[in-house]
Image 1: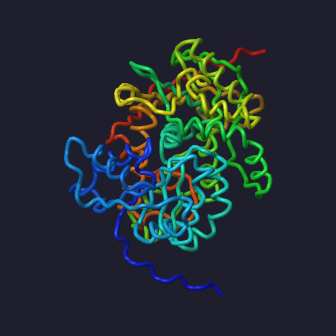
Image 2 (image 1 turned 120 degrees about the vertical axis):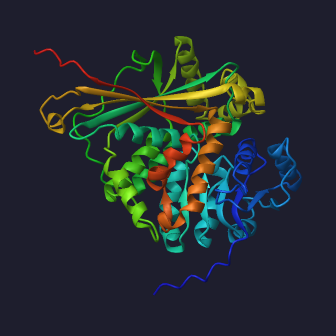
Image 3 (image 1 turned 120 degrees about the horizontal axis):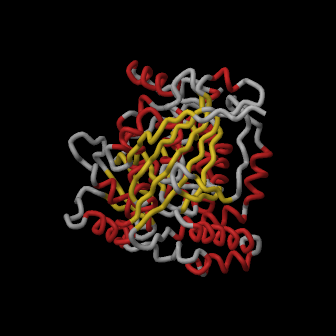
Length: 459
């Protein structure tokens, strides 16, 4: 017999941002303030949380500039190493936004507190082991308490998830996709500089790859979606994609992992995940959306206009791959990030000018069949290509806060239309509602071309 959950007191805050004074956290605060107490926004009450009250106050001043800081935004001290402080946060808010990384070090206590209390949780991690471990350990508990836990709500992996589903939805029956490759191109008038925490997470992720494999082997295997046509072709190590004029290299990112998890959940729930008390209008919208998403193999590649750019990326990968195997090598990588990343990552992060000047383009090149019956023929090859594109501002400090806050606003405004609780990917939870919101906030989705491919010459 299950013990009834005690009723949760009415939360003081709609959102608490944990880690608000960090490099990314302060930009999340800045984005959140745009929607605080505006007429059509569900965000009416906000608090910032972290270890240092002084730093949080300075963050609020910085984020509100040139205006004065709002008087009604609270500041709360809390620490991921202090479980009672995390429980207190969860009891005071409807939704906790966790910006404290690396998540493999700091994330689990926050997820555990939310899953136990029934508080909803979003984060911006791009760490596959953390995400899959949280699903394995806390999904059942979160379903029981009504805690909706969704990771990867930043640049990892919102543009990839929404972008690949946008491409998949362009394949109108009887056409079907077979595989989609995303080419990520980072652009700037100045130097491109990334967040040190992202670099640290990558180093630790590669160093602990065996733990991820061990976790996957320990879990029951779920059936994978049936994808029409041949297996995904391997292709060359360095590819020149003529249609978009970029050279590219396969990127071992979280995006492909997150998309696969979404497609597996979709296979188990072909019409998407039903809401707690879903409106008939949203049921229709959800079912129409997911019925138009056709599964395909998915790969992510990092792209550059120059061959030198590709060799720089290869060099960073070689440094990390070789040195992260040893504790001294990891120390070197984390002590001197600018040297080992050829200047792409530094502990001070980018300047505000570098943030403003940066942007991204993500091209989705899909190959498939104009008729699903062709896919079942022996030695069949795709006869159709659809190219779509997602574009937006700088990835870590602008696109990530936009994505996270838009997911948060969906949770606040449409909680009854969302699943009661559980650990999920953003695509399966926010898919029907998120693209339109992103487009209204500076992230664009375009169809570039739909092309019939020439038939292969007969043997």
